[in-house]
Length: 224
Length: 236
Image (cartoon, rainbow over all chains, first blue to last red):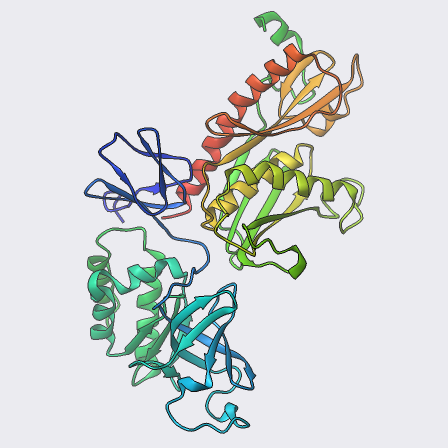
């Protein structure tokens, strides 16, 4: 790939811009008249607002994020879910829209099963998840793959352009969890694996700009 | 320092007094870790892995006011000529603590309340200056793990062999016995030249210590470039 569309990588402590007309955004700080990077990642300058987009590191949960997790434990009133964060997440029995016998919680979701949920609140005790929205709930079939959570925005693309391209090209349904877990469901294993390869291509090349075009090229080369 | 005194002094491996051993650095060497890096000074090789921020265990060491940095330095049994007994010992516990002190000033972990950032450093091959290699690797691994940092730190050991100051001490030099013997001064600095860690075990005059700091400033700049290059090259 050409040098031109490679984005600039910056490290902590690096001077990103000089001058008072620049504003420090996420991952940066102002020191005197200089904007200094606080993180390791890609440099971004949008209208004098300087940002650093990290490409590695752990997932930081935010309220409203749709995540994919694994049922780790069943308590008397809900399910403990691992979504790859420091704190474990919890789904209350109240989130199931029908009557559930408290002795048979495993008939709804058993340990080891995967679930799509939304982060409802983050408090001192942990993270509470909700299932009361469209597209949320237990995962029955398909494949799940994991990428670094910081690369999720690239997989989704600007206003969903990237993920739409992958969906259209492969004919699979794809749910992207903000924690980096991705659920692919298609008619056949071949289609699902094709979508998986496309997503991994995007994740591995997230430092490029104009990635949607690169992915189109990739699809042309790898068409069945 | 005059030119003659520089050429007069001979180091066991034939280096100049201000010459470092060849350095290599690599980022992202441990896929399972949240961040990882390798750093080496010649034969001294350190591997660092960062995990977290994650919930602190044991619970009684949790700090609800700010995040904690926890370092773990360990020398693998095959890293030295005589087999080292594996597991923590007095020396490794001390160096772990020193690493925490050297790295903490540049980390911004205040918002990770009740959480811990774990740094595990393994020395897989040792030829002196292991704590410096460990700090250099840990700094890169922390950046790779996406931990917010004010700056990167670089560490180097300055030695005083008899009366001569040298940079990046090797094992042979550490055991120097002629004249006043050897004094080892590990120094850690940010790339802007701010000191985060200095150790001194031996005798040195105030004037010469100032000189040693100046040497360290130059050497850490060299190390910083190596660290920077490795971080930038690991993407793409």
